[in-house]
Image 1: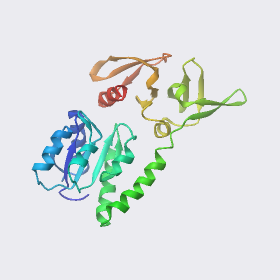
Image 2: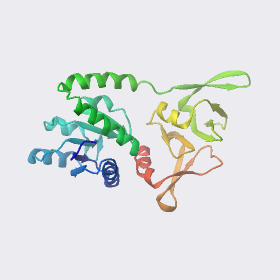
Image 3: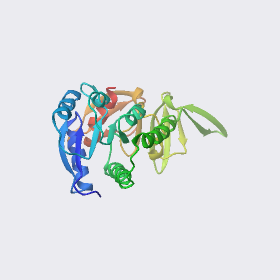
Image 4: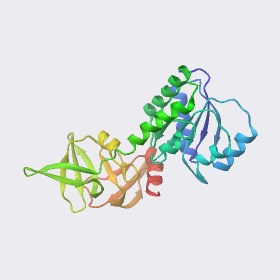
Length: 259
């Protein structure tokens, strides 16, 4: 890893900022957080009045007072930015604003390590033409953002049935088999793992609640507080097992529901 890596965090959720700082320092003990900024106004003010040296910015896309892209429109920032977001709707805009990568929430240790390695590779290659670099990434993102699955072809009684993804209320895995459950209680086996589905499904509509469930936002009836900071999700039709969202994911889940 690069020694003495000075990072600025732009994030309005204090818990997320602390978690990101913790992961960064776990990956590289020489990471130094210069400052954590919580809003567009605060960031614009800081960048305008400070000339502190820094190497990299981690920035959430949605802040309490708008989209963080506004910061980069108001202030001339030449350092690379890694955008952190619950959705990739803003991926193309991110790469137009010094973005070298973006990380989807909820992020984990491996994801942050991957993006830091990407940063180090770009720095080591001494890429001087930022426009060429971001143009290639932009083209890649434009292709990637169109790949969400719209339907599934499932086997049923010797036939193949097309099922719209949006009509699936939840996916559930048991004994290494993944089931798609519809609103009318019909259930089909799908030939995907939950990890594959997590990458294939539209994150604005589907959320990986835990190791067993991916749920459709439109199927959520209510959310209740549970023990140890977890959330109990009530969906229809109700599955046999409880759907619990961990304390670590609770904030991202609430934000996902609130969009």
